[in-house]
Amino acid sequence: MNPSTSAPGAVLVLNFGAQYAQLIARQVRACGVYCEVVPAGISADDAAARQPAGLILSGGPSSAYGEGAPIADPAIYNLGVPVLGICYGQQLMAMQLGGDVEKGGGGEYGQMEITVTAPGRLFAGYAPPGTTLSCFMSHGDVVDRPPKGFTVTAVSASAHVAAMECTERGLYGVQFHPEVQHTPFGGKLLQSFLIDICGCDGNWQAANFVEQAIEQIRRQVGAAGVLCGVSGGVDSCCLAALLQRAIGSQLHCVFVDHGLLRKGEADLVRAAFSDALRVPLQTVEAAEHFLGRLSGVIDPEEKRKAIARAFEEVFKAEAAKLPGVRFLAQGTLYPDVIESGAGDNAATIKTHHNLYLSKQLGLELVEPLRNLFKDEVRAAATELGLPQEMVRRHPFPGPGLAIRILGEVTRERLAILREADAIFIEELRSAGLYDDVWQALAVLPAIQSVGVQGDERTYGYPLVLRAVTSRDAMTAEWSRLPWELLERVSRRVVNEVKAINRVVYDITSKPPGTIEWE
Ligand code: XMP
Image (tube, rainbow, N blue to C red; front, top):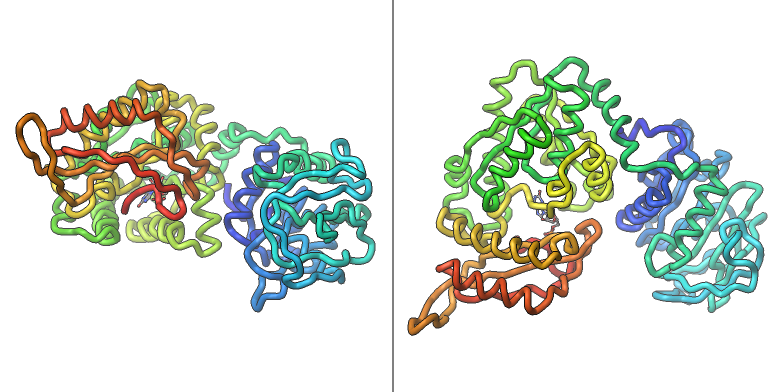
């Protein structure tokens, strides 16, 4: 589905700050309601044209009084569609409808208590007046007086408006964040809004997406051919399986073996396509080409550019052999789309890169996964019958091991990292912990240190092990892997990989660290 053609009955999340809106979108979908994130300034006419079941105004980093603070089209409050304002969204609603918002007055941060003061539809069924609830707040400005016609349904410990509603007009506001884990009743509140107030049926599942996407792909590409680059990760495998269902022999899948893959990966990908997916796959052996492009390159961004250029060259050559191809399929996911709309740098680079590549090839983009989160891609992949081994695979970056080798990428250093990485992953699987982490990886720094093995002094590379838990890679926490596992990996790596004489474990979360080292 394309953002401009969302199905009637979806909930629209107006985006006043990327991370907040993204989290709301995830939680709304977790309630079984399809939703899309749209720019904060969407016009009431555009919003109405999508026939939404409800609107949610997200929180955001701005002060409602700040210069250039984003505002909503005031006509959205008169569409007859229920609106829920969250944090900044509530303040904006109060301000735009004639209430009072106090700038910086008694902000509240962290776990807070609120008291339900009047019967409210958002609290119906689980929190009658007099109930005290714990929730997460993070705001500087406060609503002092709600707009005319609104009832205050909950107050904070500092007596500010924690929740308000005007049921006649279907307008609701909360000062706290129902979308975060630290608001334990947040799921119930969202359910009240989505199911009881907006009238959604709560039956949406990522798996439903498959049939819709197939229709959409057929409509978009007609009888033309589609070129699909395959990396072996869950996104591109799901993409290929979906396209195969939609357009069969019009699909041309190309797997570029750039020589920067993990141990045994190329064989795994080929076997998955031939045995499990039954999708024809053409492999391009391009290790020489990529390594040539990477020769002497040390700077991480230069590496990415060199790899992007090499991909472009390979795809150009492949596309030239397929005259019927008019489309390039990419596995862009929803976080990239939301983030790039909000100006996040890394995601902008990724979406621009996709656009750039398709333009260079003279092909139009097909991005059927662009409205899905990673866990939803996994659900869709399962629905499409992909083997669980592929569905559960950890994410692996497009530039492959090149961005896990600090300094120059050479055949020798690739071989070292490949062996060490394979030992780490094998031991993680044996310990039954592979599925508990978002991503586990090994990094080869460009330094050497002294060690001793047997009677000999050694001068070898250290290996950095990294494992993180995360929901979507935007933030991540380092995994508390058992010492015994780390010890086993360390012992095996220094014994089995000659060039490595030391193993360290990265205990940095994101932020401030990133998941990858480059
Ligand atoms: P960072 O390192 O930014 O990574 O915390 C977040 C997620 O993105 C992956 N990653 C990449 N994926 N090309 C990709 O396709 C890249 O250049 C790239 N850099 C990071 C990373 O593995 C993690 O899942």
